Length: 340
Image (tube, rainbow, N blue to C red; front, side, top):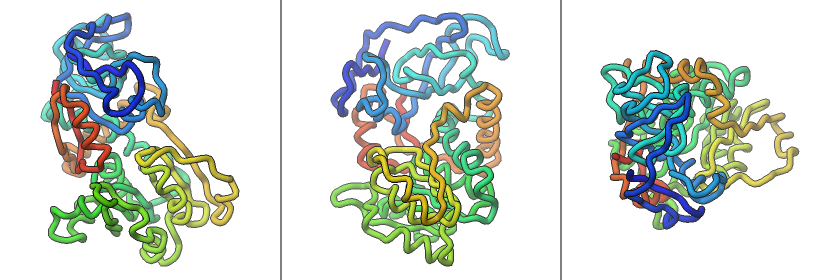
């Protein structure tokens, strides 16, 4: 079968497109999915590079959508031929063996591109906006979300608004060029205040030193700061994030787009009596009940027009390296998919 394999961690050249990779076995409790699309997420680059180690060689990818080609045993009312979406390893391939508990039926009326876009990024945004800050932030509190012009940040800002938070977002100037004004961009991204950053020299992603973000946050919040700072950028922004917190605010570091956050002294939390957490998605969809509860709410928001889903680019599986480069250069303005 066709697949993208990493035999040794590294840069984009570590991606090997193969046409003769073995089709995976289907052990008890699993199903074989004939993939239609696989989603691209930053975590794929962490697996590829070795930042998040995996046993090599491995098929890359963490989410896909397609039809059930083989089912080890009937569960959850599923049957061969059903359209399903999932979050599981090995999706950059024609076929993926997936635990049945992780299979989600694609609702009637929802296309497969939108369904797979709802998985890693949509579910991450859901737990970031609904669970991580529970008990810390309440409706009408200010929340700072980075990178609202694409990816998980785009989803998170919209969901925070749905939860009743007042959202401050950051984005690069390249992401607002298609809008008539910055106010129009802010409205589209779900933000009450949008901080537009210059592009890094020669790049499409933002330079986080081009604007004094903490000062802009202070102005927007009348000097109070934010109850939640949701930061998927990492190394370039964590010190800014800590400065943007209000008293007893929570710094949520969930990604490493600019590199991993280094160890820092806990005394940095002292000025605001702040909290910090480094969550991951799997711990917030630990049971099928929790998974289905989150995905059903995301699907309902999409169906009701409350969430704007943007599929930016669709590449062929043999263009996996091009897709990774496109995302890592900060060019994406929405979800990136690979078509099988």
